[in-house]
Length: 325
Image (cartoon, rainbow, N blue to C red):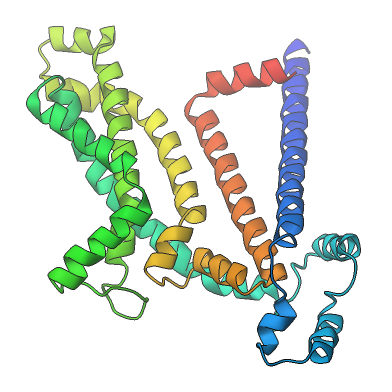
């Protein structure tokens, strides 16, 4: 009976934790959407005037604003937008007159493919570089890799992207500059995004592996006659993976939501570029929908990373559940 009571209490804590997390996520998304809604209405410019052009008469502009509902008070527009969210609608684009949800979903595959390519490139560089740096800790190669990683972390995308274009497209003529049509179009934007990922994960792999290599169980394995590489692969390597996976998951979430600059530089037709174009054109519903979609993706990825961390370290999850209860 006591065991059943403990299981019931544990299940109750999990349900309460899940409900609290769902409520906090909903509040976070609503707050983000509300902030963007009112901020975008403070941006100078009239969408109706921009659509009709400079030669449009005031009457035509007023008529279009009325047709689009932009002449209503902002609080009234906000209430209407919230009502649409409750019904599962992000509204209709001012410019294309198409549903915002459909436009975002058409652009998301490009963002997802770019994020996957950048993430894969970052991992391919970070894992071997981090392992080498850990095994050669304090030596020349370690110092060199750490300096390169620091440079990668410190270089923003709006600097590395144009530099890649100048080198590989303008100077060498090896890769296309922009767009998504050519087979190799993804290389430069993926390299631009993957540079930061590789730098961060290299440092993380090195730190996590070094921490495990200094623990008693690895030293005991070495004392039993195992080689340094064998002890690292059989023992330290597996224990060093969980924290790296958590950080890698967070980086993947950042790639899905933070490619705005890179997509704009390389004219990559993803959600980030769609957001920038919508801001320039004063397409209020599209801007609000893009920001809300980006926030939702990032929140969901973070929730998945939390679940992954709990699965990799059940004791930490149990401690968190106990504290929450």
